[in-house]
Length: 114
Image (cartoon, rainbow, N blue to C red; front, side, top):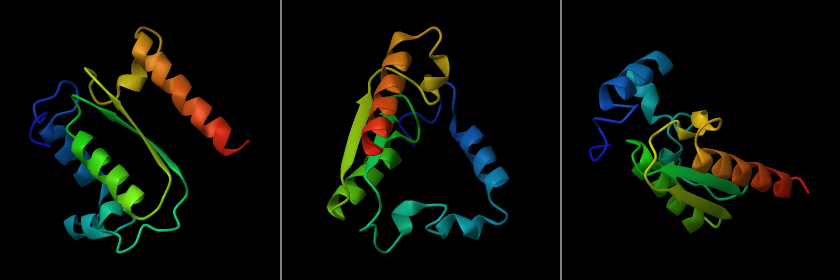
């Protein structure tokens, strides 16, 4: 949250704005349905494919979530992507790494339902 608080693209002030738009009251942020890392037990959740972007202020939360799921015995694939900001998947028309990672996500979903 601090390493990439100034962006690019997503900044800490934008995160605070989104958080305010998402919640009715600030205390709802403690609800595990909003903040899954606050759940007392993550065991039994389905397998996860988690993508984190190097330049995203939310990167470390994604890494922590992947680690917590793994510690709870949930099968996890964590795909860190270097050199990209939050929302990099929005650039699939112009950025090859965005297309590549989107294809990996599609492959993971396909494998989950195979």
